[in-house]
Every structure is written in C-alpha cells, then in structure tokens.
Length: 199
Image (cartoon, rainbow, N blue to C red; front, side):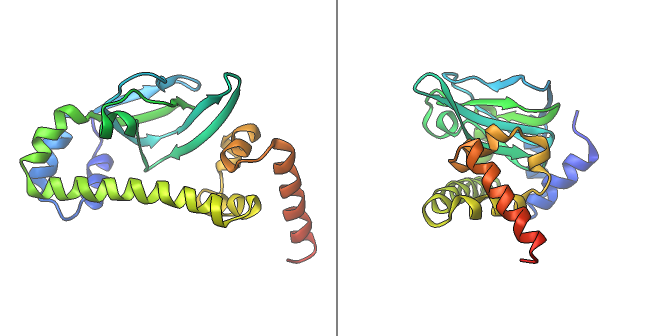
C-alpha cells in the first residue's frame, strides 16, 4: 500500500498533472521489499516494471568476459529504476539489478500503465519528460567518461550523494568510475592530502 509521502512525492514530481490522472496510475502501484543482496531484475529477463526507490540502494551490473563484475549504475532513494532494454525495446535485460541493502520499492508494470498513459494527454507528456530525463542521465554518464578524469568523476559522485561511499563496497565504486580499487585508493589519498594542505 502506498504511503501518503509517496503520493505527495508523485504529485510534486508530476505537478503538471491533474490528480485524477495521477490517481489512475497510482492505483496500479505496489510496494515491493528486497533483502540486501537480492536480485531485483536478472540478466536475460524481459522486465516491464518501473520502480521508485522509497528506501535503499540498487546496483546495476554485468559480467565482462564471464568473470569481472562491472558496475554500470547505482540508484538510491527518490530515484527510479527499470530495465530500459525491456521497457523501450521489448528486449531481455543485459544487466543484473541487485539490492545492496534492505530496499523498498514502489513499482508498477508498464504494460498495465501504458493504455492509461496513452489515453491521457497529461500522462503522455509526463512519460515523454520522464524518458527524456532518463536519456539525459545516460548522456551525462557518457560525457563524464569522455570529459572528466576519474578523480573528477569521483568528486562529482560525492557531490551528488555524499554518503554513497559508506553504503557501497569500494570495488563497486571503482568499476562504476572505470578504475581499479588501487586507483580509487590513490585518488582518496590525494584528496585527503589536499585537505590537509588546505586545498
């Protein structure tokens, strides 16, 4: 069951919508709880659920060369998560979506929501804005890898979510940044030294 705070959040997020439009979507929403370590979306699954993270942390990752785990994305409170491969292209997910800690989601099945969205101009416009936002986040990640050094990417991540390093193992943070755990340790040492030197 949705909490009042969830409804308030969605009303604020989609403030251009009439409540009646939003209400028809929220009626489809369900709360789902994941244990730490539990897989939410397995690789190879065609998954149409879109979820709002009420509490917790989801890691999106894949295996490279059958062995090395690469962290592709981290999603935390007040963010959305979903297998865009499935939702946009009706393809199985290439990635594994896994809870790193106890997680509470508010989710809805896009296949059930789509007819409602298509029948309301406001919901349709909100969907387009949401998809553009997801695309913008993906482009931002690509641009960060092209334009920023690993240290700058790390600093940006800390600015976006300062407590993330206390919640995510270093090896996952390192692969998210595209570096090794040893390189991450060096970056942290340089940053700590800079603070001591007054930079």
